[in-house]
Structures are given as C-alpha cells and as structure tokens.
Length: 159
Image (spheres, rainbow, N blue to C red):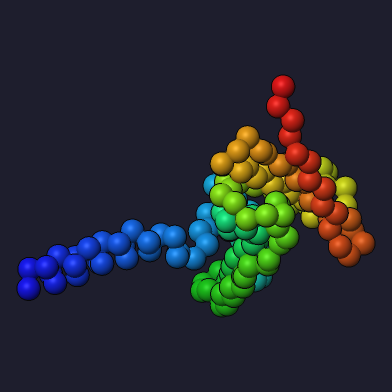
C-alpha cells in the first residue's frame, strides 16, 4: 500500500512539473496606458465629456498583439447626468516576429490629433525583443490617411 501511495505522489509531482509546458500562450499588458479627455462646455446647455484610454496586449510566445481601447461619454446639464455611454474592444494586429519564441515588448502611441500628426490620428511604435537571444525589432505604424496603416519594422544591429 505504501508503494501505491508513493507512486501516486510521484505521478502527481510529475504532472505538476509538466503543467507549465502544456500551458497556453502568455500575454503581457503594455506599460504605457494613456487616457485623454475632452469636454464641450456651454453655459445653460448640455455639457459632454468624452474620455478614451488604450493599451496593448502582447502574446509573448507568438509576438501577435492587440490594440485595446475603452471610451466613456458623459452628457449632463446643470442639475443631473443625462446619459453615460461606453464603448471599447481589442483589434488584432500582425506578428512582430515570424517564429514562436519568448518575447518581451513595449509600445507607445502619439497623442490625439494635433500639430504633430500629419496624416490623421498619428501612429504608434512597437519595440519587441527575443528574450532568449540578443534580438530587438522596432516598428513604426502610421495612418496613411488613405485607408490602411503603413507599418515598417527594422531589426536592430549591435555594435
């Protein structure tokens, strides 16, 4: 009986040791979440405030990523909140590296439309690194203003 218990313990320990290998892909949230708000104020009339925030979710195994955005619009008069609307979701973006591996990344985005954005809402940059090798790729993605985004990536050289 003692041998059976030891065998069961050994089987349980070996299964827990194999569990990380059978795990699903790992995801990492970007460290550069931003929020921007705008308001329309008019004395005696309805006032609306809209806030938007975004982040990126990165698959550390495949280097695919998602751009996620949430927005809230609040409409009120001088006495009460009349309406609150929320919207959001995540959009899948292409892989940074062609093969699976173990990757780390960071991303940043331009501010909302301003004098620095020539072609609409601007763009964003993604930096991804293969944590198992000395390999870094930088990508810049901008809106062309003609439908599709323009995306170019470059592998970094080390000197």
